[in-house]
Image 1 (cartoon, rainbow, N blue to C red):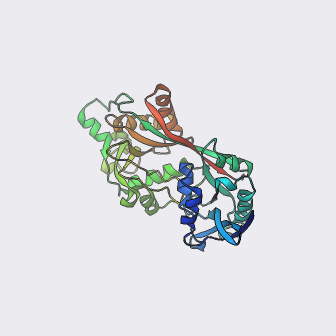
Image 2 (cartoon, helix red, strand yellow):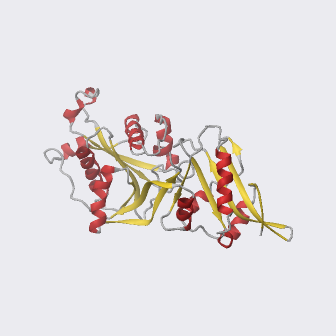
Image 3 (cartoon, rainbow, N blue to C red):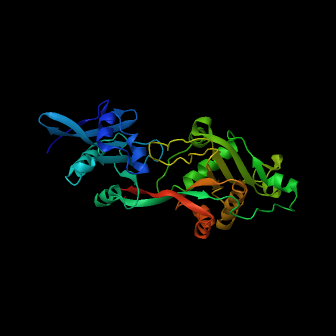
Length: 337
């Protein structure tokens, strides 16, 4: 076997698809979309390995490393080798080449990360390469009526209206809480500075797939002392953003909270809370919102282990059979610090 290495060229995706066949995992399907010609805006380096037989070069493997505007403290990396060319050192060689390229990234960032499915060849390769899990993520489908509906205030309709509100996805108040929540639950891989405009683009505008938002507020009395007494609205304690259609993860692998829904299946929802809430308040906020949004129809949630409040609400539902994990778990693996 004579292997030659070169930069990615237009048409390589079709040639490799013939050799590779369909993606072995969801993560592989996502990362194949990041294979593209090298460039500097954004910075990306993509390498192809060819098996040269009788002077004919056939692409059999590819690898890519690129910077990310979201979660900029690491570089995304991906390596895929045709099944009949594995265990011959191609993957290791390509990874070594990616590390050489990463050392020259203009950002000065060189640590690599990727997403893998536990128990797969990709996960084993990542482990052998020294990449260790830094987060586990699951897609959880919650069945209808999983929790008892909450009672707000004196139980009247007006009390419920005071605390539960349909809020425009363009709301600056909503953008502020969503951005701070996303940052808070991604301390393990910082998203960097998130402006209101960035939050809108990633989670709340039409291109993100955002369809609507429901928020949970504290009783009106909490407004006093929070700088919003004139509105007489309680502080925003929790939010649930629904998505009307499938949207790709941000930066070719970073999770952006948006996803797939549809009339025939569960609606994907990004569910979170004001990060300054105490543990009990945060748990109560996401529990009440989940009870409301899943009362009649199933919903799908992306559940990271770092989402402590949401985990404490959802994991008992998994144990009782009122919710289930869709597909396989995803591990984010990374070079050590």
